[in-house]
Structures are given as C-alpha cells and as structure tokens.
Length: 377
Image (cartoon, rainbow, N blue to C red; front, side):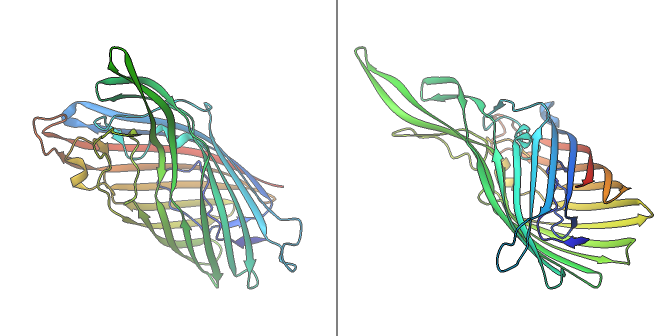
C-alpha cells in the first residue's frame, strides 16, 4: 500500500536544484539504487577563463517498517539513504578568495552523505510525520597559506563527520496533497592545528599556536511548502516554494585563528532567497513522465562581487525531466535529465585597476543525468 510520508523523498543523487518532494508517495519495503553524473561550467568572459566541475555519485535508499511496536502499539517506519562518489574519496583544494570559485557545483558535492529517518502515518494514513538526521563525511583537503612574511606552505586539512536535523509533515485528502519540510543548515569544516615558528632574534625562536580552517561544503537552512492536486490516478499538478537562509553562509576560504594575527574579512554579503517551482506528473499504463521547473534567484549580492572575492553565481532556471517504467511487483526503473541555465550576470569591480578589474560577465550551465532502480523487498 502506498502511504504519504513527510520524510523527504530526496535521492541524494538527484541534481543540485531538484525541487524537494517531502510529500512524495513512498512505498514501504522498497530498496533503491541510483547513479548520477553532473557536468557544470561557469565562464568569466572578460577574463577569458572558466571554472568547471564534474561530479559522479552512486546512491542507495532503503525504506521499511519497523518490526516492533514503538510506543503503545504505534508502528512507525524507518528509512536510510546513502550517497558516495564513484571514484572514492578525493583530496579537494581550498581556494584563495580571488580565485574563480563557483558558489555551487563544487567537487565537495561528492562527499559521502547518509540520511536516517523515522516516520509514522496517522489519521487513517491521511497524515504523516517524520524526523531524520543527515550525516556528512568530508574528505581531506590541501591548501596554501602565508602568515605575514612567513609562508606556511602546502598543508593538509582534515575533518570529521557533520550532521543536520530535518523534519516534515504531509497530508493527502481527496486528491489534495500538502506538505511542509524543514532542514537545518549543514556545514563541513576542515581544520588543522599547527605551531608556527617565528625567528625573533638570531638566537630566539618563538612558537605561535594557530588553527587553520576552511569550509569544504555548506548547505543553507531551508523550509519548503508544497501542494499537489491529483486528477485521478493518471495525472497530477503541483507547486512549491523553498526558502533558504544564506545570511549565515560560510565561504570556502581559509581562516587563521592565532594571537596577534589579523586577516581581511572574506565573508561576502548574502541575502535570503525564495525559489518557486511547478511540476507535473502523467501516467499511461506502466509509463510515468515527470516534469519539474524551478527558478532560483542568486543569494550573492552585487556588493559581494565588487571586491577581491570572485564567487560565481547567478539567477538560475532549472528544468528536470524524468521517465519511470513499472516493472511489476512494486518495482520500477527511472531515468532523469536536468538542465540548469545561469542568467548572464555583469560583475563590476570597485577598483578597476585591481585583480579581475574592471570586471567580467558570468555565463554558465549544468547538465545532470541519472538512473535508479527500485526493487520490492
């Protein structure tokens, strides 16, 4: 039996701008395997250069009812989901603030991730609630830094697991499907503790303990409201709006914490954004077709691009097309393709004689494709 669930139906292998579907109908007792590949390209035209990245991910998901009574006969279900890079853990790099660096579509998107959630249907399965935790395990990174006149040189930064809570609620009543979903922000921070030696006099060397750190991956706090209307069993239309909190954004640049060491503030000015989306689902016999469009305004303000920092981002239109075929016995196979188009954006530097001055024009796009296999267990 299909049951509505507020647990996010988010295959981690889906594209970066895939609209969250917390009210998707998830079948219990199904294991899913997925693979996706993404290629993104940003161009800074006046600089005659570009920044690109490719990410390949493998994903698996399992949802099944808990086999024991939880509280006074309540029998919830649990779900797990894993995503890992097909090439294994890799060593990423910490960019300098003046380096062309995409705000999204970075190699750290391929960090190993895992979701674990618990959900329960109520009110004769017309209402569902869920809560879960997301785990992120980032690989190490290399960086180059200089403190004053003393080059620290090339070093390796390491990190531990990070996590964030998410929760949601969904209802399905006479063809009307409504849901709300909330997720905490998620940050994977690389750190390294070192002792820097400074020669004060020919015979005296001072040791200064310091901490070097950088954010390898950061995802904003978000909240989604979604509505879908079902025209029988063969067609449905939906709309959604996702709010994202970018004001607490942590850039991927290195910071140094030490007594007497000063450094410029490389935190760009960001704004919170709301991304609207529309989607449609059609069914003919065993064939299912899904179309999703969403618009994502950039959280990067014009003020943030006028200085030394060269983060690349622009308003983005996202188009997702997915096809699914029923294999019988609650099993299916799916293919998807998503195209993200970044609007052209003019960047004007406050110092026309400085680095990257007087400015440049950003253009870009991203293609993502993938497939998944859902098997009944």
